[in-house]
Image (cartoon, rainbow, N blue to C red; front, side, top):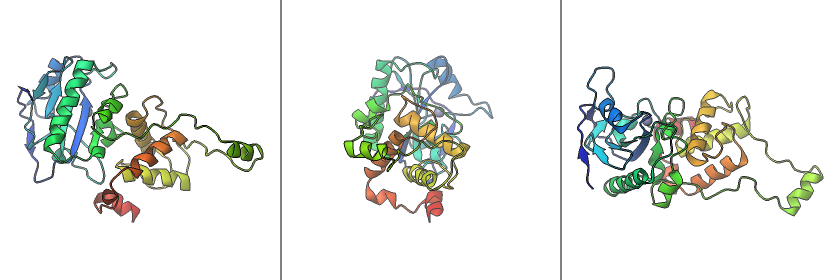
Amino acid sequence: MEFTPHPSPNFDERGGAPVDMLVLHYTGMPTAQSALEKLSDPTPGNRVSAHYLVDEAGAIYQLVAEEKRAWHAGKSYWRGHEDINARSIGIEIANPGDAPFAAAQMNAVVALCKDILSRHPIPARNVVGHSDIAPSRKADPGEHFDWQGLAAEGIGLMPRAAPVQPQEGLVSWVMRILGLSHPQPVLSEGDSGPRVLAMQQKLAAYGYNAPVCQTFGPDTRDAVVAFQRHFRPQRIDGAWDGQCDAMLTDLLARLPAATMAEPDGRMAARLR
Ligand SMILES: [Zn+2]
């Protein structure tokens, strides 16, 4: 692929970590030019970077070599790991944060992701947004980002479509009318109990930094919002409904069995 070099001094060594994550961002700045300046600013205290920046027209700038550790993730967590910079490649996509992404820009993002995935063994569920790994701090690449389009190109993992309102069968309708069953109520902040625990365990099993404690507090809500932003941007309300649960259950069912039992990090410790 053709990259325009725009070297940033803001990087260090990976320290032996394998490259097994791809993190997507939006710049949150008015122009790609202003973002390029920020991502190569050597001023102490302001030093951030990414490996690549994709501008609005689809031109790709390389700021940091892939074998180096760029500084894009900050305080983050995914699947038990906290030094996400050490094990990831970071792509910044020029977008002020509230605008749709142009087709030419998304085509370049897809091509760049494919290029990176051809060179590094990055599992599909490790293609994440900044908001997935820092749910309480970050919202990028945001609800305008086309994760579905990426998945259609073989980049990342999306659930098979789940209906917003599942069709109710005759038997369940009769049972509900007779008072023999009740639809599962939506879980939201302030709730607690075994259903909250089950939701937290599933979020943590997928990779999110969700507390596993039976209490639906602010950190759990942030993880739910991040999940919705990535997998169901049509409704981001921080409440856990049947569709969210069906989507996450489907995602977990499609993971390679071996990766579910991996004994790494905090999640394994919490679930023991
Ligand atoms: Zn970001």
